[in-house]
Image 1 (cartoon, helix red, strand yellow):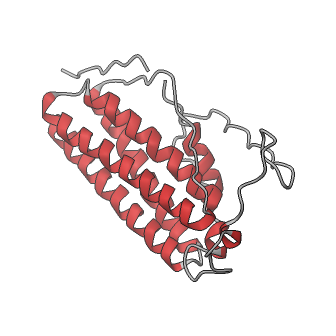
Image 2 (tube, rainbow, N blue to C red):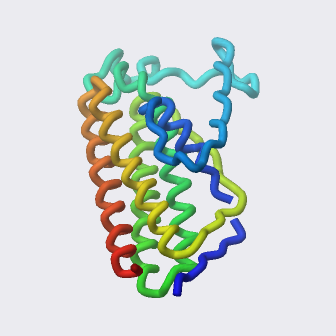
Length: 208
């Protein structure tokens, strides 16, 4: 008998749509979820922020910073929007796995907690990369709302595809950047996402 996983929380796949539009505009990994992507925030006027406060200085203007470091420098700045999208996605994944671990079969809970921790660790690595590039701490949006889960097998199938697509997008972004250190980081995160997809596939094999 299939188990139905319920949650008081809503999961918004539009975060992934935003990432795929930037990294792989021709990719549509969720053909059944055709919600429009969240509109992009218009650029702020030069010299200020939305609150009117002075803009945070770029990394190259900070005391002690090199004008153009060989790693996490000018080339990496071109990928900031993509990195911020990956951070939002990893934090959303962490939230989903934490909620799912509380409602999943007992035999799967440890794996789901491990997946939640892995997504959190990936977000921290990306946040660190953003700081190295800009000298400023990126403050990701905090997701809220319900996360509806279907039956156990369909939930595992959905999460498998999320992790596999994350892996593909990381590797593609890593190939496109000309910053060697950022490229290596994205490659590592892509390979980790594929390993997480394998863990979900193993859970599904036991459930079928």
